[in-house]
Image (spheres, one colour):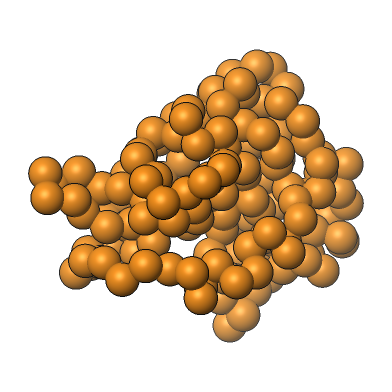
Length: 146
């Protein structure tokens, strides 16, 4: 696993490429585990300062090997990106503190070669298939902050 700054440009145009599909009526959470070998890149880099982290609004992105991702991603050609949703600017200070703590926990777990557990939000990117199982129509999903 490499750790380096996540290129946010890879996310540009994602909204335009989203396929129409049956979105869940309400948010559900889907728990997944990511082993260090599942992860391609984590952004920001572990050497980021708290000040830099806050300037970037606490954005955390984890790029996962598609074939090792817990859900099917049939239209994704390459890796899957799980990331934090946009920050709630009305409660920015508290949310940035929470994100910073989560970021440090993720980095510490990976340094110890331990898996990380995330809870994916079903909206807006996941959709339920005919069998009731969720899939990722494209390559991006949000995860909930703990």
